[in-house]
Amino acid sequence: MYSNAYYKSVENSMKYHLKKDVYSGVATIKYHFDIKALVEKHNAKSLLDYGCGKAFHYFNQEKCQLWFGGPTFDQWLGLDSFYPFDPCVDRFAKHPDEGAKFDSVIAIQSLAGIPDADFPIVVNQLMQMTTKFCFIGNKLKKGKASKGDPTLAEYYKGDRVDPEWWKEQFKGWQGSELVLKFIE
Picture 1 (tube, rainbow, N blue to C red):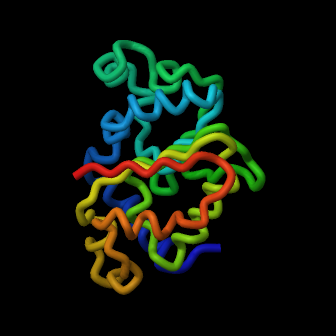
Picture 2 (tube, one colour):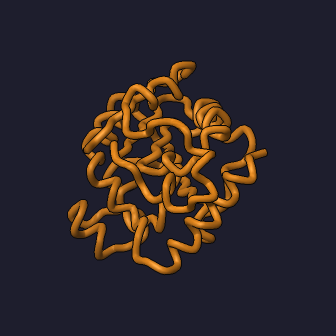
Picture 3 (tube, rainbow, N blue to C red):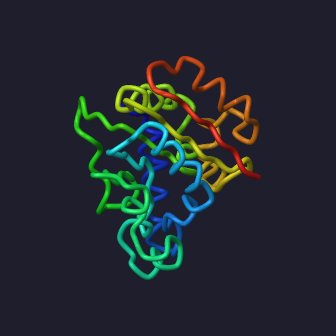
């Protein structure tokens, strides 16, 4: 389904996850008020967290106490269900089933590692799974995913630090509301 570069990128990220205390889910905190406003606006009850990392915002009570005053992120949002997905974390590596639908989908700083050839596939998957809103949050700076492995450099041709590049990738979005938010 995906290119060899996609699987190589996942493999590299899996190794990075194991070596470092990274991708905990803390990046979501920078966008949590925006996401909550969308959940309330759309009365969303289910969520797919695409690229959830280690998902501490759902499962680490100490972090949840610090970040949300006690409840987990899904509880704080008022959701009935959530699906944490990250192909780079064994615990969350199972992709949602074909035909799965979620009121809301979030992808926080997780799409920069998708090779250019696979980007349209992922965008289409997100569009097909989202019924009410999709929130894409990303930093506008080069990340390790796109420059960390020189053998993959040719698969990341787009300028991912430019908001216009991101808008171009999602220009065919249909159905649910799409929100792209960038931070520096």
